[in-house]
Length: 149
Image (cartoon, rainbow, N blue to C red; front, top):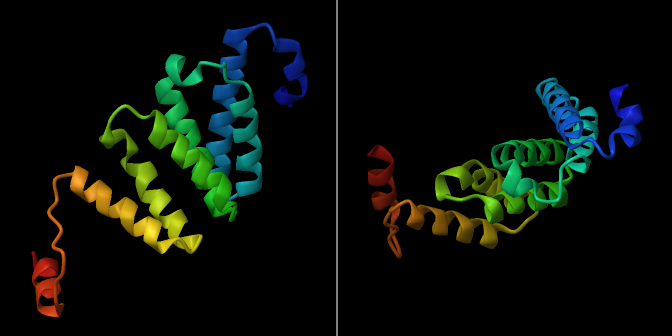
């Protein structure tokens, strides 16, 4: 019910942030309970309350919120919305470690969207950034040996 009076807090940035945080918490409760419609609704309100420079002024909160948005969107089959939220995390994150969860879910979304080549390329690039060596080709025996390691 607190969201019904949002127009009254337009000029109160700290109150807007408190309500954005409450909406994110409520959205995560919905996500935990597999109520993706409700979760999406709360996350949308939370996003709408963010200041223009939110990635600079609220970096950690934004990473969490956008990832929750992506999970709720993915879980409710809104793959385009999920992909956009994940791409925003990837674009705004400061280091690879902070991008890994988003990249993992992005690859899943890409496979669901029938973009296997893009999913493979993304996975390949991440593995290279993590220092993994990937052979140009291998046979079944090589694959079994890699799995046993």
